[in-house]
Length: 614
Image (cartoon, rainbow, N blue to C red; front, side):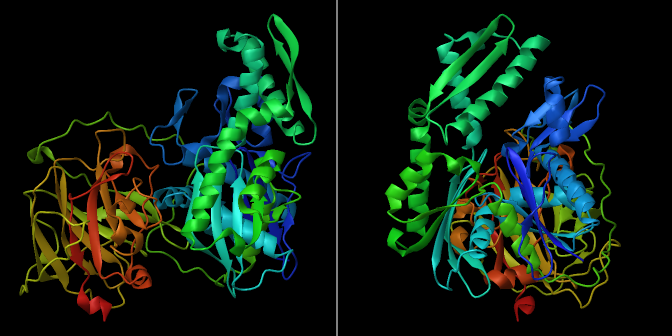
């Protein structure tokens, strides 16, 4: 019998659940002795890559090859190096996903019909796109993304009745991240209301570190003096970290615990009490309570309006968590019997509701075939800020994930880039080089560009032209492209980017051409810069910094970069249906810094073709 799959790739542990027919979701036993497996990857001395329990078993003998906590590194342009090879965090996530999928398919006798993969609620669009693009080559099965708080709420609703309109708050304290979100029950599921919050680098890992700090203090700083270059020392430290985790977990049910220390020349045991542990972690937990309070306020509700407060994530079992959260809201607190399972179970329940087509249509370009874990492409050295005359656009070939989770090729003919399915098509040219293949100008009708805080302070002239694409890599069209809306900009700042043309092609893709000056589009360490496109609606209209990571990141934006930085970055495409979904009538652009923070007054907004909006 066919089944649907939910996967939770956590910072410290990964879990999976399946659902068959009308039955309830059931957790899958992934490990030899546990339902979950550690989220760890290890590069062996002979260059093989292991994940999950296979990696954990080798950690004590090959500690130099272990990689943990890579989920925290999603979005970090700096690769992780092991054995002389560099890996990106999304590659390691894909390896964990592949391992989980292999185990599930082995136990269930074949692939699932659909997969729902969860992620933190406060992840930016670029992080979500990067995750989806990395895992998509692992399987031909449709993959959908879902926030972890939504999955937890869905799981809770499978066991407890929640009426439409009732509000649930989810407090998710996992191994490496903290998420909080307020959701309202609808007729078909849950809807996030207000702004999800969280602390991206806070979780059980930090509490483990607090236990190790206690051990170190008790040993008068002896751990600081050790060098892990010595193999026996490295093995002993790896064992000590495991014992510290065991002690931390033991304090959830006991008043004290012991941490054995087995290091060269140092054999002892350090005791830690629950009171000592709680004193160390209380400030961090106070921050999580503050984030919960903000999320509730942003949802426009009060604690009294919250029907249920769900505590999920392994670290939510710490007794102090329930005490602090319950005191803050003065509401009943629901702690899942297996907090590590809640998100995976909810993801499986969500997968059961997906409409799966009988046949997935072929795409215009072939899907990417990826090795289980390919080395990252090493970035070129940081390029000094060039003058406009030095800028040159290479031909781009890079993959992009569409909203169905299938991976498509993004190719280029001359300087025109076409997304074969469901994407924004970008054509770039250097400032001062107006030649673009396949573009001809007809009658022009001048209008005024929208004056928003996201737009440039330069002079912008908007006109209408007719664009005929001659790109061979474009998918067969269903209708003629719209006449293009064009613009010219007189840059008043450096760096600067200007949308020069916007049209909607015959497949509903939004096609954009742009000029740039004062930077090479490259996502990497400062001073590199790149380009962010966005619709000026919702939170972006209120605060243009939401077009990048300088803002709360609850608005959609896409990035464009030069491929010399490597294939780790994936962009998401815009289509006419995307614009219609949010009521957008314009496309805007801004220059973004290396960390995705946008630079205001460095771009412009251009209306979408009116013919496409009719």
